[in-house]
Length: 184
Image (tube, rainbow, N blue to C red):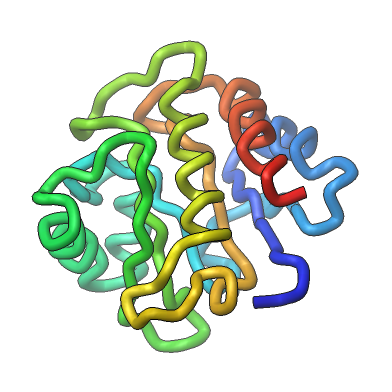
């Protein structure tokens, strides 16, 4: 991984982009991308999925179309390592199996237990997911035994729970900002 990691906050709409701007301010290792995550060349992407790894709606639907077979990989990893349910507040790194320049890794960090759930207005679930992402990026081990921090130098993070989950962009941004202070 780079000496300093690069976090790319992804927004497809201006409310989310503006909220991300507040997170990136005064953090040279964080940048905001206004556009699709599929436009980026990064080492890993974050999936704010559900606890069961179903990837059919929102950004997860985008990942499923962009990274063929990723839903099956995520669901198999959740079954093998977590008995079929990755709880909100936990995260795991899964290889995408995609060729470069596509991301080699996906970090699954559920913001909801079941597909389609709405998040509470305080953003607690998004905050727990963000902390889990930071923890696995900083301290996690990849399936091949390497330290995640040594391999994942750039990470794309979409809004957590701001689509299907209905969380306000500014609340999501505040929870992510709190979580990434561990990397400042």
